Image (cartoon, rainbow, N blue to C red; front, side, top):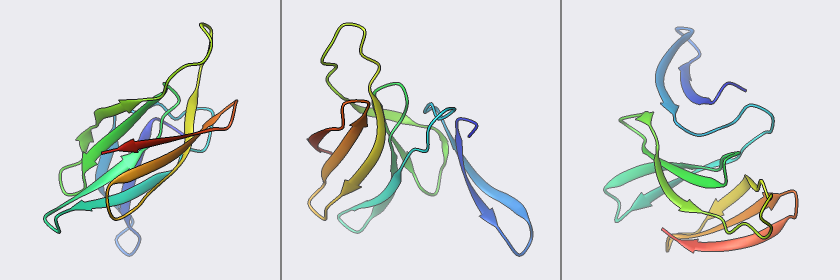
Length: 106
């Protein structure tokens, strides 16, 4: 876990594209794909910094913050470790340590 997501060509054994900007050093973090109007495909990822990140699949690079989960306590360090998206762009997330479920429109 090194704060990056990589797409690899397993036949050539090389990196094709890299996505950075989110935090993922201590926990396994989910990602999912979302297509808007069948034009652009985005990779959506949770993060250890309470934010959700988005990348254009073809571009990679530094992610864009698209949402922040509400923190319930002043010293709360919510980790977005599980997520899924439906065809209408409603994203459901679960956050550690309280396992609250959040719904966001993206």
